[in-house]
Length: 158
Image (cartoon, rainbow, N blue to C red; front, top):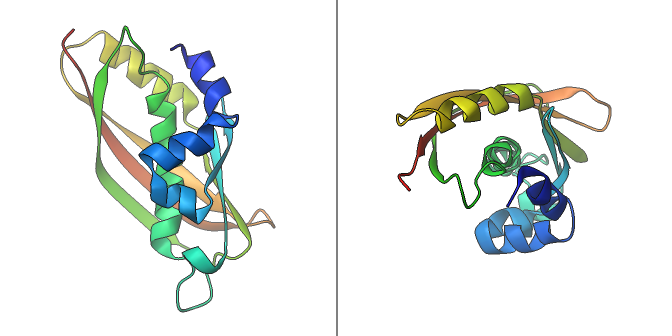
């Protein structure tokens, strides 16, 4: 499946089925993918009963899940029948600035970096890592958290 075909599928109704099959907790929490293009990705998660913490804001694990998806989906779009690779999340970090209530968007603007990373991976037999940042913003466009995810990928032998 090409990158463009993958994008059309995950930005359509296929995404709910993808989440239900591959990431059921993200499905139950209500995670949405609203953008996936050459510049990056954007996921959304609305604060509600299922993803709350005792302090009346979004639970950090729910936020991590939506932020991780924003990075992982950018790498996953490169997997097709001709190019298979393994991917593993090897490190995460997060800084939280304020309470997360309402609709929270998780944006990763590292599309160019992911493209370069994947080209290096395709042309090598060794594993590579990439660090991808995500900014979480509330409906007022205020940053509520910053995340970093380090992914390790290695090309599978054909």
